[in-house]
Length: 252
Image 1 (cartoon, rainbow, N blue to C red):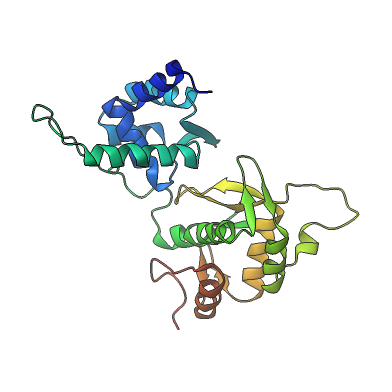
Image 2 (tube, rainbow, N blue to C red; image 1 turned 90 degrees about the vertical axis):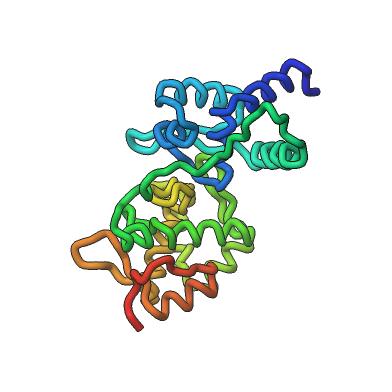
């Protein structure tokens, strides 16, 4: 049972304009750094750090470490639904004439990650795909119930196994029977440029291998970028709903 004290604590956290601004810009599903959230809220990094600590302690934010960076995102879909409900009530409530409305805008930051548009579109990260293409694949697999991603790992569902085998993904090679498991089969990896997870682990490597073997993507000489071929745009569009954001693929 929810206590009045717990309810009041969450309400008080939402009632601060800076914290409300930071929560609002995270509604699109991205994970942002404290510095980016500070700029979005119009506060100093030190002030933002204190706010973010309170939000994380209350279970409203989750924090992920990747390299030397800490990324903050909404802790759950339930938090997003709560914020949407508050926004709906706020939109239907007349503001007091003495209160000056404060609009919340997304953080004014340059696109995170690599500046090269081709690298942001599709690239390799160790042995798996990253960039917009990889995130689109991951989100499509989750939406169709083929993959379930959690905080630290993922699961390929029976339906997902059928779907990926139909695309030619060699799942037997990704998890060979009778051999010691040397690596995690499926796990989420926060994308550097998209700030959403793509799929890593043995399954992520198998997806990259399939894309290369079927000629859907080609490596770019001297770069981690991979170019999506014309045939790959068709195949990946059909399988994952992928549409390139830039003319970074190979010309038809």
